[in-house]
Image 1 (tube, rainbow, N blue to C red):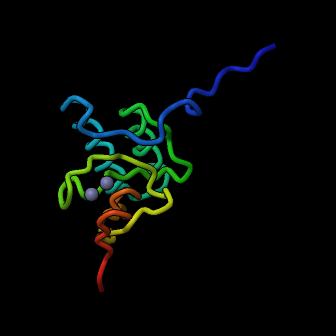
Image 2: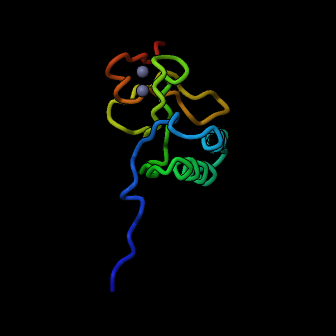
Length: 118
Ligand SMILES: [Zn+2]
Ligand SMILES: [Zn+2]
């Protein structure tokens, strides 16, 4: 008897957002918005799982994916990554009605960090 392969173990842990078509990007954005607005853990987890599956990347252990904040506010980096990766920099905390903080990927966090100043 052989065991079924667990496909997640072979998936990449990060992806470049711009490598996908606008249709895929829109779908990913929708799932991330759902996660951002989720009012309970189950809804959040489902939204993040769908977001990961949309890009074909592994679902992070903590169910937290982020797109580098440099996409809109910095060098243009488009990396989508596990929010708990070592070296990630928080550039803004989540607002009162949302779940997601703004994060820089570990490379950007190393090269040109913009940590929260308060
Ligand atoms: Zn980055
Ligand atoms: Zn950057």
